[in-house]
Length: 294
Image (cartoon, rainbow, N blue to C red; front, side, top):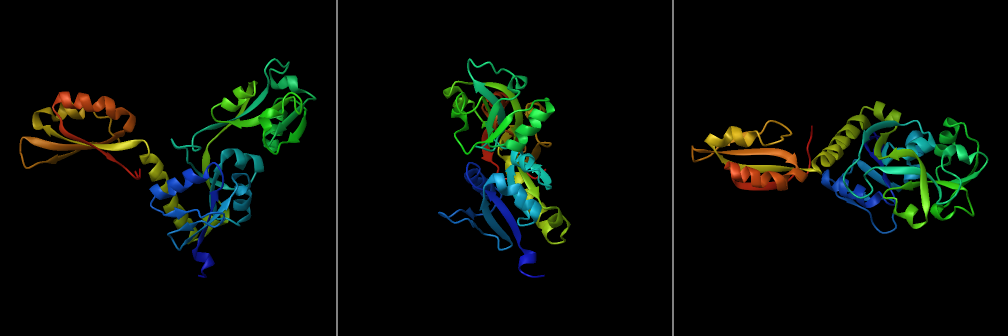
């Protein structure tokens, strides 16, 4: 095989997803470095080449085979209509990796309350294809205008309504806009080119990479709890543990005690530790986890 045939070309999303994607790769075990204005991030795997691309364009390049795989939002996959393989939802409790909503909104006090009210009106949006499909589903015909940015400031003078992305709703509130409909809820997705998934070298490489990325996300909300427990209290302690798997019970030098360890949701720890202590557990430690492969 040539060098190109044994190298995986991955699209890294530029912009709001960029820093969290770098963090995800780091937790998965890769040193991904995005340097200055370069569009070719460095990664400590000679079998991977990274290219920094806007999420809006990503699915198209994966479909064309320019990229073997990439991370982009579900919204832009649907917007472009690209024929790609969607392999995983990478939703995670990190900035810009949660659920975002594309909403249809109009000015507070305007006569536009539902999509039906927009017949013949002007709608501004960056997601023209998505909006046109939404209007068609509701039997509405309206004038579409591509928005190059600052979409939320356009009603009521430059547009009657908009379709824009909203994570917290703060920008809509700041511009006195009311939500008429939720058009789409979107999360980051891992996508791949169909031909790459048929390639005997690239397909296993993609599988291994995705396993590590998903493992890092699975571990993002979990920790290991380990503790020493009197043998007489094993059943009582185990019954308190909402385990990912069966807790591990190990013998200690003192035959009257055992070590118990298990994986739990991090948000439960502050409630669990005092209860475990009252039940007899001692030497309780909380250990971060980098990856969980399920």
